[in-house]
Image 1: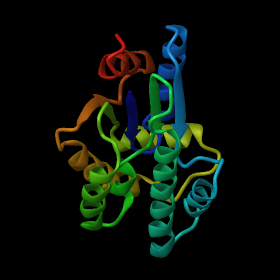
Image 2 (image 1 turned 60 degrees about the vertical axis):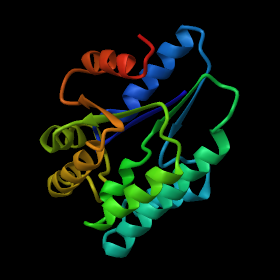
Image 3 (image 1 turned 45 degrees about the horizontal axis):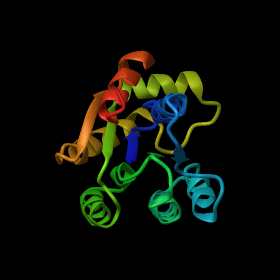
Length: 188
């Protein structure tokens, strides 16, 4: 089963995905956890590099490398003999593209990538995401300013409201969110 946990930067995606993987393994289930951008391939490494570069060209390059990284993971892991494939970041990377390109990119990619399973969007407010960035990051990415988080949050929530996503309130405590994730992933 595919489980996607997506959301803004600092929404808690990785934390929740790791907790879900740990829970599943504790229940005797097999799972693969993929985080994007990943560090084990060219697309992920280049995508991460561009997250720290300013300018519109870098903005688009980061998004395109990110999408290539996700597609690579799909090709590598789709159909593998595991019960759960958990992806951190999937389609919502398109929300970081300029408007209205983000809608077209989302529409295109949502038609070509698997979407059967649990698509979970952690809906964290830009203010909470920014607070987490300030408190937890040594170096911030180009999208981790309050202005960028606000712009991206509106676009991402618009995309997540297409009926495919389970929207989880990401402003709450980690245990509260985890309970919602377990229910959304149909494991509790």
